[in-house]
Amino acid sequence: MPFSISTPSLLLLLLLAAAAAVAPPAEAQSRAVEPDPTTTPTPTPWPHQFHSLMVMNFSGALQLIDLWYDWPNGRNFNIIRDQLSPTLLYDLEWNNGTSFFYTLGGDSPSCRTAQLEVGILRPGWLEGAAYLGRRRVDGFLCDGWEKADFIRYYEDVETKRPVHWRFYTGREAHVMTFEVGAALEDAKWQAPAYCFDQKEAEEDDESEVRGRSASLCDVRESSCFDPFLSSL
Ligand SMILES: *[C@@H]1O[C@H](CO)[C@@H](O)[C@H](O)[C@H]1NC(C)=O
Ligand SMILES: *[C@@H]1O[C@H](CO)[C@@H](O)[C@H](O)[C@H]1NC(C)=O
Image 1 (cartoon, protein in one colour):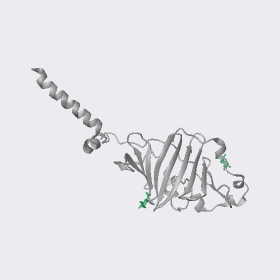
Image 2: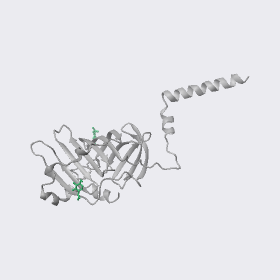
Image 3: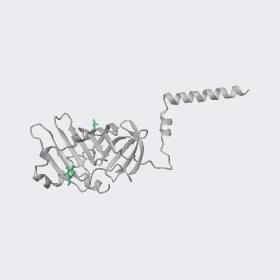
Image 4: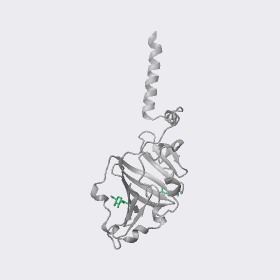
């Protein structure tokens, strides 16, 4: 009587499959996504062009950052809004090491420039980061890595998109959108004229030099970059 044996087991299989499809038990879910013990996950390189909206949190002070990463054109743009501030701060970085920090319009448009020894982050800047394991971050199951005791970086296990990163200072980035391939039109990358007729801008002090890359640091933090940049 082959049917009396195979029918219940088939039914069981179907039930199991249905149960798994509807609501995988927490245990099975975490087992299913355990990283392969024979290979350590490595961080996904950044796409050569992307647009991301991020919420930054530094001890409860919130900022919205509109990030345009554009490796083929050697440029990176952070457009920053402090919570409820009417003013945007533009942080435009070129791969030749020149950065412009400026505001537009308003009562007192301003611009500062800085000249750095290094350019923008490479798509593979996370190479060599130490694997931290797998855990839930911002509600997403993520692989995490630590780079140079400076940053902890988490990406979604399934989609490989960045979800969250955190600096050793406690400053956190929450990635809200991540549009691969999105590029800001060329005209928007033009720093305003008043960035180019300030002679004193060449003499900018150290604190401004360190204000590079707001997506990766805080323009007002002073200790972020030296240990990190030298490790990239
Ligand atoms: C911001 O970070 C602080 C800890 O530094 C935390 O207490 C607070 O809940 C965070 N706020 C948001 C909106 O994530
Ligand atoms: C770097 O490139 C930008 C954009 O083309 C330019 O405005 C800036 O003057 C350049 N800096 C140097 C040091 O050549």
